[in-house]
Length: 422
Image 1: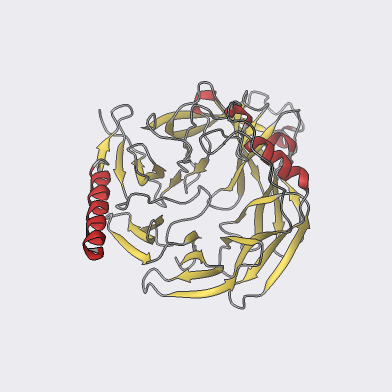
Image 2: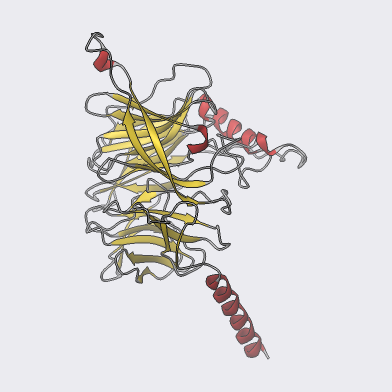
C-alpha cells in the first residue's frame, strides 16, 4: 500500500509540474514591444541571480542559474541545460577567471568546476556570518558577521496599511508585510556590532577589514580590481549614507555619494563591467525626481541620467560595452508609485548639450547631466513584483536576462535587445 501511495504521489507531482511547464511558452514576440522573448530554464522555480551577482562564464557561452534541484549552466547559443551542482544550494556567482560556480551549502563555501562537475571546499562560513561575493581573480571571498540580534516584537494589526512596510531597497510588495518598516527602523537603531571580512580561497584564512555598528550589506567585489570592495550602510535609505568602497587590506574607506537635500535617497549600487564606474539609483527627493547616477572611481567625475517616473526600475544594469542600460520596472506599490511601469526597459543614455562654451571655470568638477531614453522590451503587467526580475546583459550584449513569474511558476527568460518587426 505504501509503495502504491508513493508512486501515486510521484505521478501526481509529475503531472502538476508538466502542466505548469506547458503553460509557459518557450519563445514569443511581445505584441506590445516587438521584441523576441525566450524561456531559458526548464524547471519551474528556476531563478537567475541578483542583479549584481555575476552569472556568466569567462568565454561568454554559459549562464549559471539556480534551480529547485541545484545549479545549472545554460548554453546561450544552443539553450541546452546542463546540471553543474546536483543538490539545492545558495549560488553566489560565477568566477570571472575560471567560470567556477561558487556556492554555499551547510555552512561551507564551495567552487564547482562547470566542466568536470567536481566541487571543492574552500572555507567555512564564520558563525553568525555570511559569504556573498568573490573577487576578480578568485583569490578572495568577502562577507559580513553580525554580533547579536534585534529583539522580536509582535507585528502590528493586519488592518494597518502595507505602505508602512518598506524594505531596504525602497520597494513595497507582498514581501513587505505590515511592520516591515518598523523592523528596518529597529535594526538600524540597534547598532549591532558587525564585521566586514575577506577569506583567502587558497588557505581559508579569514581577515576582518572593517568593524562597525552601522548595518553593512550589499557587498560586492569590483569586476576588474581584486582588491576593491563596494558595500552599503543598510537601512531606510532616507536615513543612511549608503554607498561606500574599501580596499581588501582595510584601507581607503570612501563614501561615494554625499546627500545634498533632506529625503534624498540612493542605493542599489553596482559596478560597470570595466570596473571604472559605480552606478546607483538616486532620487532627489525620494519618489519625486529620478536619476541613474554614476561616479568614476579614478577621477571622481559624476554623471547623472534623468528618467521619468514611469520608467524607474527597482534595479538597473549596464551593457558590457557601456553604451546601454536596462531596468526591470517596478510594481504597483513601488517607490515610484503611482504610475510606475511594469516593464523590462532598455535605456539609451544621452548627455545634455553643454552650451557654456567653457565659460564656467569649474565645469569639470560639476555633475554632468544627461537623460535616459527608454524603450520597452517586455510587458510585465502579469508579473508579481514580490519577485524582483533583476536584469543583466549577456556578455555579447544581445540579450537582457531576467526572472519572472508572469505565467505562474518562476522561470529565467531573455529578451532580445534588437527588436523585430511587428
